[in-house]
Length: 142
Image 1 (tube, rainbow, N blue to C red):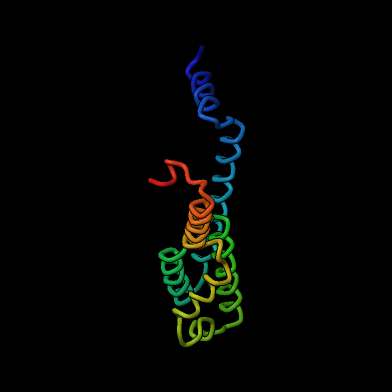
Image 2: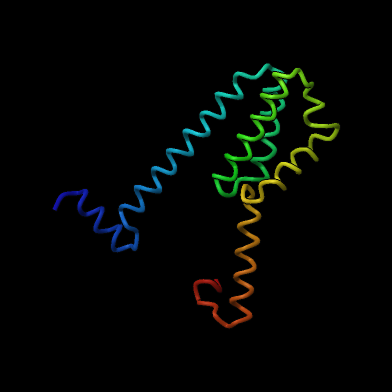
């Protein structure tokens, strides 16, 4: 039996179908492609817009990263707003408003799936529901 056969047997034994693993890898490649395309779009922005979008991305990544599709959708929308604003000559401050933190927070609220806290809220609710119903396993309790 070759090395690759052993890997597939091990993944099946662990409950992971090799086809599922391939789909997960393909999904990861698609996400990388989308992120690179987003970065290429932002690199083409005029310097003030690029600096603002970099700062917003840094802020949202600090509070955000949840589901990668949600993060990418949020970043792609952000890039679109800034591309349109730059094309129309809208000043950065007009795009973000007087309070850039509120702008970023509003963006995060529009994409709750992009926030890790959303996943943790669901996990907490499920754990409490399990505890209340007496369906807690030893693994869950630790």
